[in-house]
Image 1: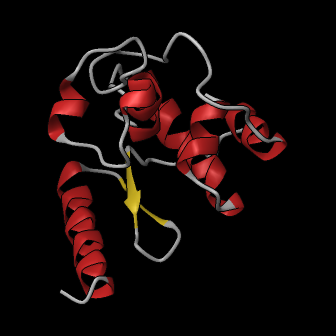
Image 2 (image 1 turned 90 degrees about the vertical axis):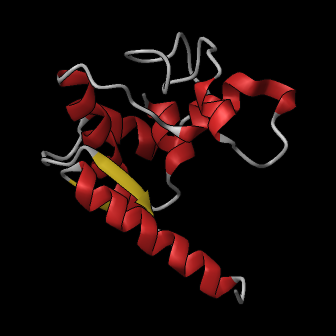
Length: 130
């Protein structure tokens, strides 16, 4: 899990919250659905963009298609990510998405998460001048 946390965020203060999302999902049997595991499972076929088809393509590391953790680490975790995995925050969060400003927005339900995704997409469009 620490390797997934490592790839999900570079923001030290968020690592224990990211860990809490994964722990909360595992506790209720929910898939992790985390993009870095998909990217790792794609190997050299990853071109910098993820498509819906990529998220649906089964690999041993695709946490959109498997339940639980992948069979091995996807990166070398830092001490901070190891600590976050060992000591996750106690939160009700089940979802997170990039906020477009270098961090993430955390949510407890899918409706709120979907609104956060739309906010993120709006920030991206503004950054790209669209």
